[in-house]
Length: 146
Ligand code: CA2
Image 1 (cartoon, rainbow, N blue to C red):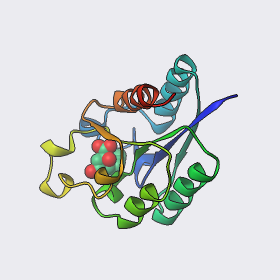
Image 2 (image 1 turned 90 degrees about the vertical axis):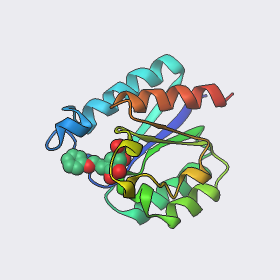
Image 3 (image 1 turned 180 degrees about the vertical axis):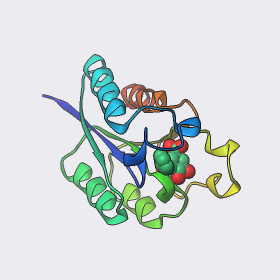
């Protein structure tokens, strides 16, 4: 039976590779998806990789993960990390383990990025390792799932 992981991406992450390479690196979201698929193959996970600029769509996908009994979620919620009670509540509403991740070290940036609305609802947080944060999040999910 395949073990599916949702890798969810929030607003503006579709812009990776086009702007701000000093903060987020020069790779595209497609490059990150390919890295996740390769890591998933090694870890025994099938990767379902998605991006949306819309908060409600992300909420729906979190609910979908709960309904489908997906093994885990790795989420880079982008700026919604810092604002979204809806994402916090959606994560709390499911029993699927969730790892929050960020490409940049949000704690070394502007103060408004220091607080995460979703951090209290997730298993753990990975940030600051560039796009490798995604692969590290998959390893974290491997370590906490059977
Ligand atoms: O470091 C991260 O992964 C972030 O989640 C990225 C978000 C930011 O709002 C969070 O504070 C930290 C931003 C998403 C990407 O934004 C871009 C903007 C312009 C060009 C490329 C990407």
